Image 1 (tube, rainbow, N blue to C red):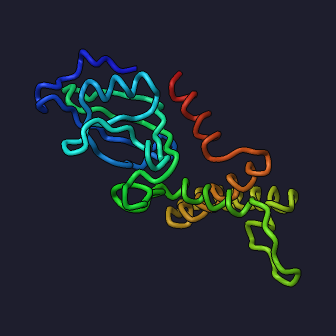
Image 2: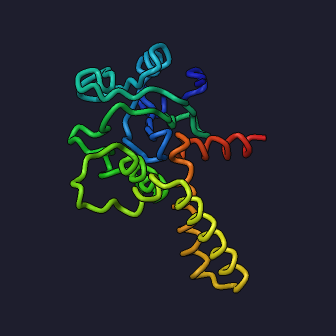
Length: 202
């Protein structure tokens, strides 16, 4: 996964910079440092370890439970920095925010997919409270498939009319309705991205 002998620890006085990224969302969670020992522990346990100038060797999440499971480790071209792609068990920042750079979910599609997951969760609502549009689609197979077809046709029309502004709006509507359509099948944006990733790697 990572060749420690290829890293240039000398340049950083025994340390390399580690940029930690959420493997699912692409959010940059934090930037820290690691020495050889920290990276050896990371490789041995499958969870991120860092070297703090003040705290020494530390296992991320050992106290809070917000561990970071390693998906991939990759060195940069100079060998003095490492990109760590992880699955996180909780907020990355000691302040409780999702990332050390503020709230995460900067990707609009990921934020939409998260919203759909919440809308799909069972909820109790008063008898006189109408369901949201998304909930109506999720509960009515014929309606959601009909709307998907309608939005796709509107996108085709906008493209045929060479109307970029309208095409962008219609494309956004299609993406929303696609994610709604696959949600009742147990699929999410991650499943769609996984297919695209396999195709891209061919």
